[in-house]
Amino acid sequence: MSQETKESREDILIRVGEDLFNYATEREDIKLIASGIPQDCEISPDNVEYELQILKFISVGWGFAYYIQDREIREFLSSAYWEAIRDLCASLSQGTGLLIGQELDYFQIIKERFNTYVRALNRAGENYSPAAVIGPEFAAVCGKKDDIFCVHAGTKLFVGVLERIREYLQAQGIYTAQQ
Image (cartoon, rainbow, N blue to C red):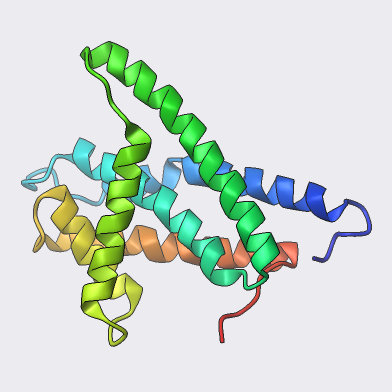
């Protein structure tokens, strides 16, 4: 960790965790990718944006879990990140539940999507790159597995998020290349 002389290790990890959470909730890339879905597409642009946000939450979590081999750092960041996502989801669920008049558990939805993507990766096996699996699965979650624009949207977000996480962790001095 490169900046340890100015900040304690824990302070650096807390800042990194906050940065990762802030990146996960930032929506500019989602809006840009969703704008590439043609207007005459059978899939609702609102649905695509909604699912892209869920995929981004998951991809950020996967990104640092994949790129950080130090178990202690990875577990600290994972715990802090997913707790922040859980808190955000509780707030969103409560607000949305009041609006629609029924209970909603947004964090449970994220967990279900996470499991959906993991199952798709497991079905594909090691012969496929995760990006080649996530795009089509994203399109399926959106309701149209063969929609090339939707496949591209999911793939683009997933790959872009992982690349940004890798670059960020590298700049923070806590990136460890996978063997």
